[in-house]
Length: 120
Image (cartoon, rainbow, N blue to C red; front, side, top):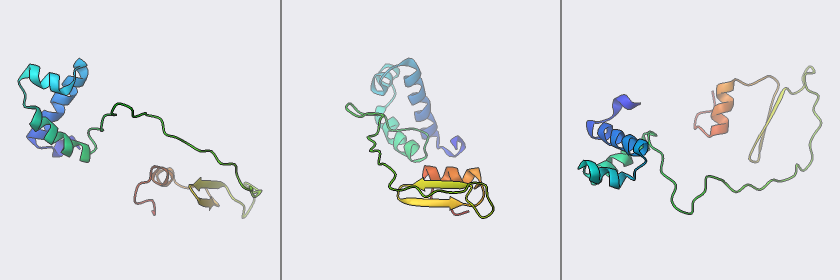
């Protein structure tokens, strides 16, 4: 992924990594090294779109997500391992997927992470 970066984006990524490793704010790093902060910020937009940078959390944000646990309404007994029985049951949101054999791991990963192409 880093091979399709422009020189400007590559330099911006290096500056961001150096500032992080030095424990400095990017603006302080740019000022100390005589680098134009505006060009770094502009390149960071493209780097975030390519998934090479994550957006930093702002003050008041939390890495935790609020979760509400609901009780299972009524579980249907399943005979696991018997002929014609279920081997795997996946509940994702309001969708229940029942499998007669173990699904391929890449498919489950794509489904769980919300990737757009979990059909194969």
